[in-house]
Image 1: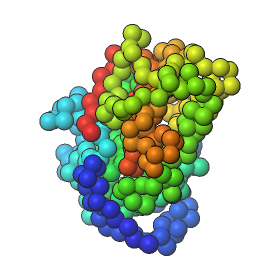
Image 2: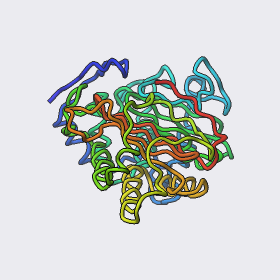
Image 3: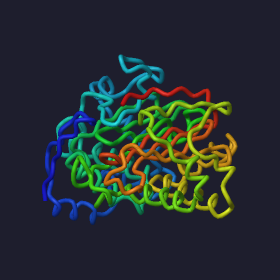
Length: 348
């Protein structure tokens, strides 16, 4: 099967198709590690194969030309603002797309980049991430871009990979106060730009269903609090702080079983990512008051099929925002920190 949809709001057309057969072959392959003696030795040491250490290995392998194209000062700015903290639904952080089999990166570098990328995710999610990239971008390594800020191995560095429905970061906790190294984005248009109400094949829609199961647990009064007519702009995920007016119903007003269900929603939201990033996100949330300091809102706008399974919803606290937009397909913006002083640099 080959499918490449024009995505007006993502402002891109996918290229370089691969088939489902190629996809199955790819996901059944062993974990990728570079074939150089140095990289083989890394594979024998779990600490050395952490993404942060692989970023250092990748950085050290770059030629001067590659560093000029892909490496920037920690506080580098361009017309997008502070580039390291930028996030969007579909963007290229540099002009050099990472193409498997291309000439810009050596084979060993390509393997290192793939190892870094997938080790930022929960292994149970690797197949789903590959499927999302297949549907949205022609596959892994077809239309993604990378950049490195600062110098890996020091106390300030960050690796960023971007593309359609993708912004993910690796910073070794060198970015103060924030989880995931800064704001992240994920999404999926599984079978069509305008998805059907049940979002067939969308790897992230179970998150939407889990949140909607909470709405069904609410009584009439609670539903009136939680349901809002119009959704905010999806990229509006800046922090409001402790004095913020969070939309929807406060988690502190929910019953014990309802609160327990919100905890399950949160677990599902962070589940795709590696354990250390999950833990950091939870620690940031706890430092700002936990889930009890957050609210959850559901939005009537964008209700695909008018089935009252709310495609758009938002979990928000003083310095925690997770905005799920499931209409016309899934876009998710996440911004998590332990301080509301962290500024957002988003476009969407």
